[in-house]
Image (cartoon, rainbow, N blue to C red; front, top):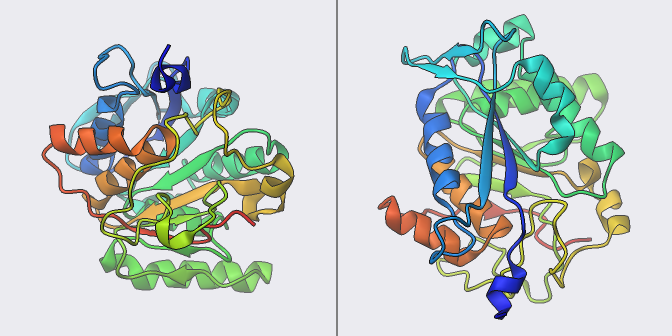
Length: 293
């Protein structure tokens, strides 16, 4: 068996999309297309790297979620079911759209975000990622995910975002959140040791970050073959129990962030192949705290 085959995980990475009423369709559809296209092995169409579950709706009779564009999406699980099954998911993706209404009504996915944060803090043995697209970052700010971190959101919402972060800082006497106005996406709590930051394949500031040292999956409990996993003790020392937090800017930048997610959870090669198939130009963002401390 060759090295690449032996390194591929034996199960897909589990992703939960949280869709609230009035969500932005492109915030969901773009990253969903990226993730469902990704393969562990480009020569094996059955080696799907991600499995998608959609959360939304109050009951089994009301599973349809209406986007801001008037398109109905059938969710797989209700909010209550999503909470019950939250431990199953390696990644939670929160999209934007109708953010003012969600914040005003203290509606989902706000509680789901907090529950995912608590889950990671209580169980650092598993690697988890929280990704927001566009104004979904406002939900992370509201739920005190971002103190001490760097983040971004849609440019039209920078002021609102900063105000929300400032309110949390004042209320909880917590650290300041740094807004990055230029990046397509911002990554916090990168999870693996980096010997040379300038040459690291994990740092996306470079136009060509190079290739990953391993094709091993980094994204779930099936982390059996990777040789560079950080220790649980180190992860526990990180903010949020080592929860990787990624925020992306407006709408289309969610696809850039999703490609980054493919690159770190599957491989750089897989991300580049997805970009080729989708005819995307992958604009890379910024990684903060790129060295596991």
